[in-house]
Image (tube, rainbow, N blue to C red):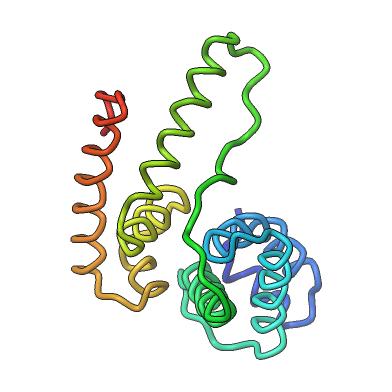
Length: 181
């Protein structure tokens, strides 16, 4: 499998397929991440395109393994700058995927209810805890990458994830989910 950085280098060297592959891979996740700040999917899509536009017009030097964190950091910066015009909260509503057709109806209902409760409880967390958990668990970023995105140290991210998980487990238990880990 070709790395993100290799796709980026291909684009920088004139191969348009690198751009296409990166946009396919990161377009929707970046849009969802930005939408968490803006609560407007159309504006989030516009800013996602701006992230790619900036990346591919400025062509900054990016170290190996750093492209994903670079894009999320740029997305965060643009979203915060855009958000300063108005005030909304971070949401995880767009994380629901289509359920597998083989699941029983009861499982689908149970899964949707658990997701609703998870989103509700995530919404009650401190914004830094919520973002650290989102980046590390839902986006699969390392603590180092999340630290780069959020402008924090790895130790701060470690603490935020730990405290966020503790708080989230307490909130989930309050809502009747006792097997949260």
